[in-house]
Length: 430
Picture 1 (cartoon, rainbow, N blue to C red):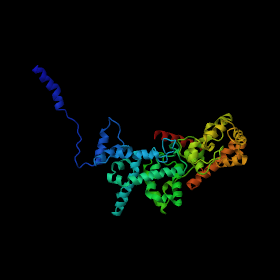
Picture 2: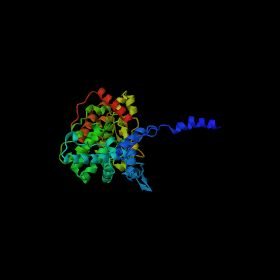
Picture 3: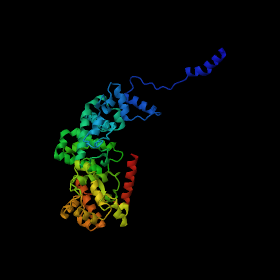
């Protein structure tokens, strides 16, 4: 028995006793940022940690519960819930900024902190490469001190609430219709920075112009960290009389791009829909403008003007009739009336009326059509080609007005189709 025990001790227990466990030793002088990086690198077997989790661990060392700020506790709403409820319609589950993430919020705060560091360095006489960058990238989040977070958190939260109001003013009510989720971060940071100055008409007009240049320039689809920081620095300076931000001065919109906007994956596609509502488009049936109440009460969405079924019977390709040029915001009930018949047929039905829909005078109906930038004569005559050409011209004018500049003549349709394909791939990947 003793021999068996000695063998067990030698072959089994001693292996445990002298096993060399790999250790990374971090002394008290190791920065919190370095600790987080090491923690992230060795955590390969479990759930990947995002910046918010790492910053949560950093702040916990100083006694601050970051998760409680975001998710709430003891029956108190956290910041996430407040964002979900911001301008949320009574019959909707979430408001327009409900998808703002915890790292988005930290990113906006990081813009303020890194800008403060840069200004301090400038006052100290540093210049060029010696100046710290203004940024909200991952590394900047890991270097965000608790004191900076506490200093800017309320100001930045107010910026996101103002961003929700700004988006509603652009007639963007649902996350589904939001051109770019990523553009909310610089928008909120800018609004937080300028405070009540955004309520002045001249400043708001510039902000609107900046926003639509970002949308129709399709600038916030991928690799946006640099642009976010640049807009945060350049737009407030522009509002105070400085130079145009690069998002405005360097952006172009190609005229032929309208022909290839066929999917909601396109930010510009969603932008055209919002602009039409913003500029006073009226429903074909009711004549109502699409304010928030009508939008949700009437279940408004993007629908074809020349119906799909009719277009297919005429031998028109989907690549043509599915373009945003042939689409516009309409209520669900109006779209049911349109059905799949020729425009001349459904317009005649609207003029005549029925047991559920009162008749509409031809003059009023034509006014409703013009509010959608749709030429009545082209629709009454079922002139699809003429309609498409005329409406492309009018939509282009609407976009030029929003961007404050003329559109570029544009590349060929084939080249634009490649852009649409790449855009879809980038969006799905993101």
